Image (cartoon, rainbow, N blue to C red; front, side, top):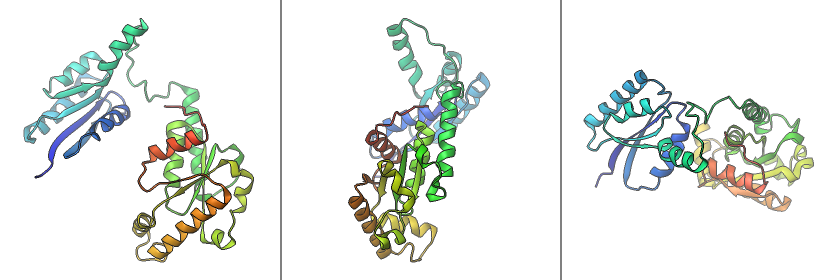
Length: 275
């Protein structure tokens, strides 16, 4: 039996990131349904709302079921205009702002785009600084200023160090460097020298050899680099090295970047600045 198909629109007066995250969390609870998710950001006027409604109605005209909308629209007039599309609509702000206003005894500002804005200049600056740090200290390019790192990720090539470093920086303002463990390190049976003074900041990422082979083969097909025996050998040697050096580590194969980053933040008791 073919999977049920539903079109899901994420509609926001800002970037749509908040609605995407909340909506995705809800949709993952439903198996056997093929969700096609479409994000429409910056719907902050009646004209934009009309364009949004036209896209939603076009989808409804060829879908077997009515579309679903996840919304974080602040402006009530714009929200009502989008609701005119006659779909199933979940507006997260409408759900939560009214009860919060009643509890706090204060009316919200109803300001568009506050959740991912640059109004918080200090927080925004910290996040950009952390991203720049992650990029400057990616893949062992530089070991300068490791003393300023909150965490230094280690692991074999393509084990997920770079995306995890950037996620920690972009989402939480955590300064994360990363440094590769390479065959020469395994031959010496020792940590790379630049890492010695910062053992307390090291955290390892490992990965199943079969998955590593798939990832490496996309980059360098049919090479020694992506050979399955080589992948198995590198993973085994990296894990042995991390065990011997007392480095905490996690297998990234079945974990999302969000899960890995949260695990690292908890392990190091790092304060997560949510932006």
